[in-house]
Image (cartoon, rainbow, N blue to C red; front, side, top):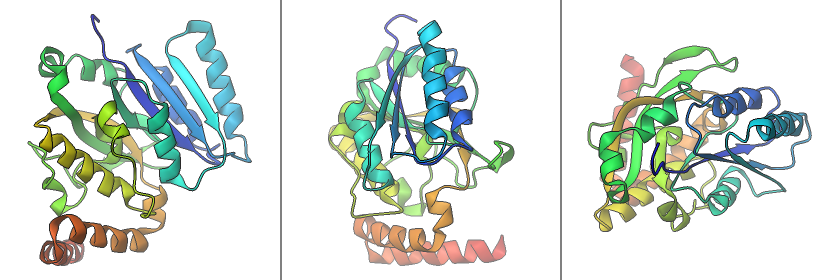
Length: 261
């Protein structure tokens, strides 16, 4: 494809031997070739690096895409993600962590073929889409309950994280200027997405709804395992960005929705 955008996929790992292969295969099998895969490993002590090394070796036979591996201690998930952002050289970046996978082999090809994006790529800050949830074996569980809005804005996340982090493609220059806030341990991705959208809106950049299912998301991540702490942190973030009345009203609605579900 002429003038194809380079997409940086950032994968953060730590002791992920049971799930990392699925993610690596997902990137490896993409029909789109203009990919840079950045893997940030926090010094795994299991067989994670063995999977990564075999992936690098397979890719060296075909040179399908670039791979960069960084293996060093970090100060948690979001610190590792910040390292990935600094390593990225693509036009856009996305996070695809261990156990997650791109929805189809043609996902990135479909993304890059979107006519609106092709015609005026410089005006788009964020591309977004839908997400399916999968279990630890990669089996489909359900469509994500929160659906991407027709038109995303920085105010959309008053109702929660309507777009999954892994289905949120960001222009790399904006991501570099907006690192994760390490004061938040469980919901820094929620804060990061809001701040990115606010920055993009100030520059009058656009958001593109791809109307694609972009990601199969492993439903057993850090936030899921620490659900209560994550909710409390998200409540504080919602109050910070949208005010206390909105945070209280929305969380009361979350409770009602959970009871009647």
